[in-house]
Image (tube, rainbow, N blue to C red):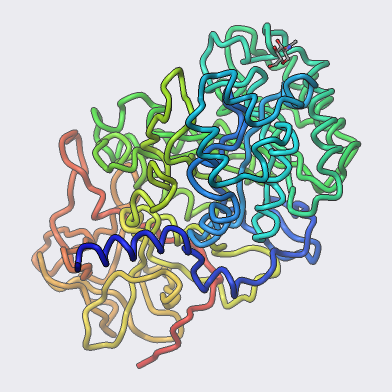
Amino acid sequence: MGRFFFFLVVFFLCILWIPSIVLQSKPVSALPLYTDSRWIVDDEGQRVKLACVNWASHMEAVVAEGLSKQPMDAISKRIKSMGFNCVRLTWPLFLATNDSLASLTVRQSFQSLGLSESVVGIQANNPSIVDLPLLQAFQAVVSSLGANNVMVILDNHISKPGWCCSNSDRNGFFGDQYFNPDLWIEGLTRMATIFNGVDNVVGMSLRNELRGPRQNVYDWYRYMQKGAEAVHAANPDVLVILSGLNYGKDLSFLHNQPVDLTFTGKLVYETHWYGFSDGMAWESGNPNQVCGRVVDNMMRLSGFLLEQGWPLFLSEFGIDLRGTSVNDNRYMNCFSAVAAELDLDWALWTLAGSYYMREGVTGLNENFGVLDWNWCDTRNAFFLQRISALQSPFRGPGLSQTRLHKLIFHPSTGLCVLRKSLQEPLRLGPCTDSDGWNYTPQKTLTVQGTYFCLQAQDLGKPARLGIVCSRSGSKWETASDSKMHLSTELDSGATVCLDVDSTNTIVTNTCKCISRDDMCDPGSQWFKLVDSTRSSSSTESF
Ligand SMILES: *[C@@H]1O[C@H](CO)[C@@H](O)[C@H](O)[C@H]1NC(C)=O
């Protein structure tokens, strides 16, 4: 009986997963969006942080994934309830350029691939689209997201429908077999036109992950500028989003030559960054060294654009959510710190718990998917906690602001160092509850508006707040190649690092893996001092 009740509850949770937060959420910002230096802002000049999830609709069936598992409205609500405000919705070019493809019905498309089970699933969960042409089914997904206040970025992911990407898939660069530049301009124009006037479509990614033997800088400028102009002419409301060479990661050529466009206030760049972007370096190297090196490289290839005053949308990142990949776990700690420090706009790869068919496998399970195989539950709740601090802006134009301060962000948990009272130990908690900290020229970490500073007591002991900020254990250096250890010297002369124990209490321990050790993981000792003007939701004081 008890067990039956449990299943009943789970069953209903899955059907009625509309948390109250969705019903209360305020409408999306005043659209359309613009750029203001490196920030994306709304029509009133207030920062809008893109916290998106990728939703694939570019594979063989050319139907947004998951619609055989759950109603699209439920999926849209689920996206919102997980804290995302936007979807990067992928589409294959041929959906917009091949009328016989676009006019196939959803049913016909699945049937032609032998995916009759998916037809049954769509019939059950989304009967209203089963006999719609593919293009109209795509529009229905955009509408459903709009009805739930979810913004959409249309991403031209590939030309020929299918899993992306490889150097030899002939979809990689202008001039490849499936990548005729004129046809591409035609398809972008068509898509931009179709969604002109659809408010929640806020941006278009011109092309995903340019790559392969044909790639070159000359053609990049030639065609990307043409594509950008075409999209803007057809739909002046969307942000025009450009990605670089070498799987979208390399925009370094913009150091020397900016793009030349007739319009302003709409241009955004995008890049991708995964653990596997650096092979198995994270697992085989020292994480402090790898993080330092990989971040330097990312800044050189794309991150510099922020300093030049362009928004940079990190439109794909993600990890194996089973949590078993050492490479991914180490990368994710480093990635989260950077995403917080730079307060990036981003899109997680990926929403899909499973695919209708991927690379020939029917119903393939997606270990990077935030939803589980049934598109019912979340795959890894802890991961959602980790990214939740990144979902709202730390700073930017027009936000309700307090004085600039630091948050002490702990990337491996997604939490921040909080103080409750002088007596209680410092602990990790939601960043939204954090006081502001100042990192002073004397390298003390003080609670803004007070005389209290962070102090180490002893090895293995909780850190605490004190007022004699000149005493040993009060001066914090950012140590190691990752610059993410906060280290200090005790009376005894020993150096200790800020750390977290199993109860999330802030303690100090011997610094981990500062030098060459490749086997150890310093993640618990990684902290990032993040600039913020967010006001704290807890106003508790001494
Ligand atoms: C257009 O789409 C149809 C249906 O999928 C396909 O058979 C045909 O080969 C496509 N044509 C081109 C030029 O890609």
